Each structure stands twice: as C-alpha cells, then as structure tokens.
Amino acid sequence: MTSTTLPILLLLGGFVLQLLLARWLTPVGKGVLATAVVFASFLASLTLVPASMAGVAAEAMLLPGWDGPFSLALRVDGLGVLFMVMGTGIGAAILLFSVRYMEHEEQGTTRFYAIMLVFIAGLLLLAGAADMLGAYLAWEVIGLCSYSLVGFWYKQKAATDGARKVLVITHLAGYGFLVGLVLVYARAGTLAWTDPAVASAFTSGVAALFIVAAMAKSVMFPLHTWIPEAMNAPTPVSALLHSACYVKAGVYLIARMYVVGGGQWHEAMGTPLLAVGCVTILVGVIFAMAQTDLKRLLAFHTVSQLGYIVVGLALGTDLGLAAGLFYCLSHALFKGTLFMCAGAIQHATGTRDLRDLGGLASAMPGTAKVWIIAAASIAGVPLTNGFVAKWLLFSAALDKGLLVVVLVGWIGSILTAFSFLKATVNAFYGVPSKALLGRPVHEASPSMLAGMGSMAGLCLLFGVAPQLLMLPIVAPAVRSLGFDWAVEMSWLGILTDRGTIAVTVGGVVVLASAMLGLLVYRLAQAPAPGLVSVYSGGESLPAGDRPGAVDFAEMAETAFHPVYSLDPDPGYLRIWRALTRVAGAAQTAAGAVLEDRPLLPIGLVAIAALAGVWLV
Image (cartoon, rainbow, N blue to C red; front, side):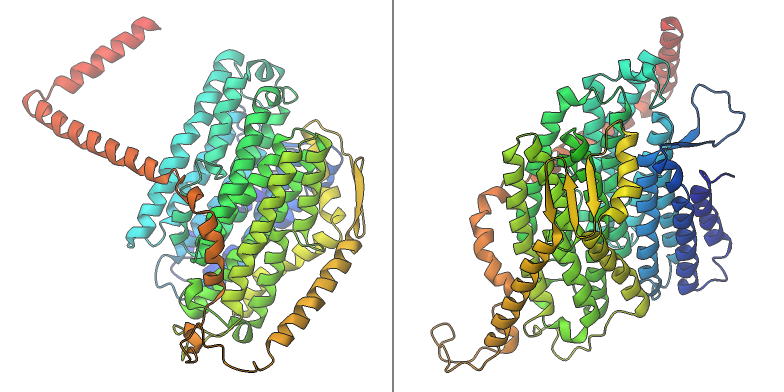
C-alpha cells in the first residue's frame, strides 16, 4: 500500500465493510460508515497535492510483478489529483447529506452505500490509470454503478426505464473509447498515455472516437437526452452523478487527451468540439427554462454547464484549460449543493414540482440561504466561484478572438439567471400553494444542512479567494498537460496576461443590487390602495391560485418554443422501437429454425473458429 493507492483502497475497503457489517448496522450507521470512509479517502487524496505541485507524478503498480502487455499501474499527475480530490471531497459532503436522507429506506441501503463507494472509486481509478485500458475499465465501472444507482428503486418503472436509457446511450457511445484504444494498440503496441509511440498512433479519427464517448458521458448535445430520465434516482445519486463522478468522466477524458503528443489532435478536432460545446450551452439552458420539476430543471442546467466546461477545454490554450478545469471544480460545488437543496425540499414537502411549492423560506431558512448562494454561483454572480470561472472562460475566448463564444456564454448566463430566479421565487417566496396548505414543512436535518452548507461555503470562499483552489489544484493540472500557467491570483483579484479584474468591484455592484432589490421587496409588501379586478373578475384570488414565477416564465418559454421541437429524443425512441421490433422478429425466426435444426449453431461456431485459425 502506498499513498497513491491508499485513496482507492480505502473506498474498496469501505465497500467490503458495508457487505460484512450489513446485518448489524442500521441505515444511519451504514451512512456514517460510508461518509467516514470517503472523508478518509479525501484526506488521503490531499496528501498527493504536494507532489503534483512539484510536478511529480506519483506511480504505483496495482499488481506488483505483473509482466503482461498492459501496465495495470497508477500514475497520478496534477490532472489525476484534481479529479481525485474533487470526487472524494464532493462525495464526502453528499454522503453526509445521505445519512438522514436515506434513513427511512426500509431496504436497499447496503446496496446503496456499497455501490456509491465503488462509484467514487471508479472515478479515482479513471483519474489515476496509467494507460488507456485501465481508464476504459474504470470507465465501465462508473457506467455500471450509475446504472445500478439510477435504478435503485427498481420496482418503479420510471426508475428502471431511466437506468436502461442511461446505460444504452452512454454504453453505445462508449464503444468509441474501446474501438479507439484498440486502434492505438494495433498501431503502437502500447496504451500508456505518455508513451511517444501512442502519440504517433493517436490520429484525429481516434480522437473523434474518444470525443464521441466523452460527449455521451458528459451530456453534450445531441447525446444528452438520458440525463432527465436519470432524475428518478435518489437525490444523493443525482447529486454525485451530476456534480463529480459520472458527467465529469467525459471531461477527464477530453482533458487527458492533451498529454498524447502535445495535444496534436486539437488542430483537427478543436473547432468541432468548440461548436458542440456552444450549442450545448444554449440547448441545455433553453430546455431548463421549460421545466417545472426541480430536479429536471437542474438536470438540463447540467447539460448547459458542461457546455461551458468543454468550451474551455476545447480552446486549447493555457488560460482555456485553467478556465475549464476551474469551472469543472466550481460546477461540482454549486451543482452538488443545488441537488441536495432540491432533495431537502422534496424530503420536507413530498414534492419537487415548482407549481406545488411556495413560501418555503420561512419554514426552511437554512435551505433557502444555501440554495440562493449556489444559484448565484451557477449564474455567475460576483463573489462566487461561478463568477471567477466564467470570467476566466470569457477572457480565454477573447484571447483567441472568439467573440461568438463570449456571446453564447453571456446569453447562457442570462437565461440561467432567469431560470433560477423562477425556481427560487416559486419555491421559497410568495405564499404556499394549495398542495402545501395544512401540511407541516420542516427544515432539513443538521447533517443534511452540513453537507450542502459546507459546499455552499466553498462556493463563496473560492469566489473571494480563488487562489486557494487555483494554485495547489488547478495549476499543477494545467502543467501536467504540457501547458504553462499564465494566471496570477490575489485576494479579491485575478490577474492574467490578458487583463485584470477586481472582484471587489463586482462585490460593490452586487451589494448595491441587493439593497435595491430589498427596497423593491419592501415596497411590494405595502398594502395595495385597491383591488385590481380586471384579472380576477372583482374577486380576490385564493392564495394558492395566485400566479407564480412559473406562470411569469411561460412567456419566455413561448418565445423559445420552436427550439423545443428540435429535441432529438423522439428520433432516438423511434430507432429504439424499430430495433426492438427487428430483434423480436429475429428471435422468433431463430427459434423456429433452431427447433428444426438444433445442431446449426454448433456448426456455425465451428466454421467461425476454423476461419479465425486460418486467418491467423
């Protein structure tokens, strides 16, 4: 056991303990055990930071003495450390949230916590794999864990359908990764990421195959349609899947490709990847605006936010990579927080439909504060990490003269703010809907608040002092990919070769806006001089029937209605139904043939074997 393997071994050890102690542990006990294990793995991952800051990649053999054609080794450089710290840190907060969230599950908690631990371990294996084969094996482990977790409530048809859709789309696209590494091995005789022979075999065609696999994993348009169906999973699964483990696997693969031959693939594939990222930003946020289910709204915002991250990586510059990787970490924080808030709301009210919510800020003040911080971060409000991430990304795009990228990102940010304004007002302010009248609503438990509150606090900390994250984590990752570090950080400021921004200026604007908003809110609470009857026929509307933010947002949704007709999912479903019919017909025909000629399969296998021997 070494410091390199310790984070992974702790998680796998926790998996074994969950199985061995299942009979004696309560659901809360299982959650506490899982949280402790992941937190220990997080601390172990932090011990790798000094070496990565020094530019040293930590190496270890998984099977000492192995003399096969593949290394079965770990090589954890700066990029690997970034993803290991992200996976374990976010995972620890989410599992802390899970302790009380899952305590009322009568069965399945052992399965839940055990697979969650393997899920996180899969990301760590992916981040530390020294070659493509190890990365692909970890890639599949992550996929299988997500399938099991999305379908956790397997007795519900919506859950099993969602799990199947996740598996089919991402697994089929994942064959691009498999075919690509087979082609590389056939040409180079090795799969080590840093081997010069791999660089010569890593053609633009191989890069395209890898990118297709990454697009499905990271919900890039048009392979994003599985993600709203995955919302039938327990909220901790959604939080981990969206923030750290699953969608970030594709981000890792795209970033890791830069170590192959100095990223020569970027010359041919960078522009198409950039275009896909820009389209994904707009498609995700426009579809998010039409959602009334809180988790589906967050799911489509995941699509949009992954577009920002991929755009940063696709720029192919030092500042672009810094922006993309910082955005990756920032997204993990604010999106994980938002999903936990959504889970707390559903846990307290029994619903996540925005039309059935309202006035929760008085009953759930802690959750409301945490939600507002995370919502401000995803919208890019100054003093949050989301603002820093967007500013770096726009600066990198301007450095390359790509004004259209800045325009797309700016439009996406405005629509994101609009969408979260709708969700925030409808969930936390106004009056409770008729569905909540007479229903006792309680605040989230202390452990749930601690899990999401800690991440919201980091959103503010890394917005005010981004150097705390950039210098020890992001900078070594950028250098490990063969790029220089061109960003200087200071308290409340960011300095690059392209310009400077004082976060304090943004802070003044935010405080002034907040005071103006408070003034408007107070004025709105004053009693109206008379009843405006033109909309209510002279009668006062019942509290639960008053128009809310969802109704107000319908005008924007109407404006974007033509975009919703471009959803590729109906086309995918038609293809799926056609394949199902073909498979059924083939099964029927094969059954009839085998009934008459039962030895036919044996003969066909023998012929195929002889043909293979002859070709060899």
